[in-house]
Amino acid sequence: MADLRGIMVSFYSLYAFIKKHYRHSRFEGRNNDKYWSDEYSKRIVISHMESLCKYGKSYISRHECNIGQGLCFDINLNVLGDNNVIDYPSNAGNLTHILN
Image 1 (cartoon, rainbow, N blue to C red):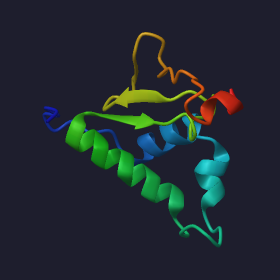
Image 2: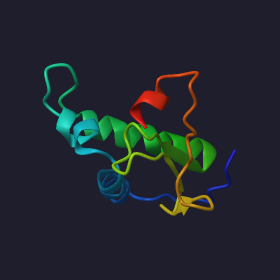
Image 3: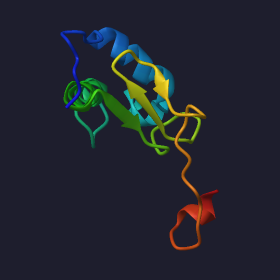
């Protein structure tokens, strides 16, 4: 469990961070859509907030990420990792090799 020492990013700062890194179609583009809830993007932010509280970090998958690569970020909204992204290798054992 992460030691947060009472420090937590605000909902609005996290919302802006996620909006910057998410594909629109996977975030605000789903608000008011007939298949998703009216406040879909807020629910995504709440989910990331819960992950930050519990683990001290959260992940954005390559499917949601606007650059097509996953990333991990911490409670201070720093992107973590050597290359600042998570590398998903393509291999012929799954469908990712078709899309890459």
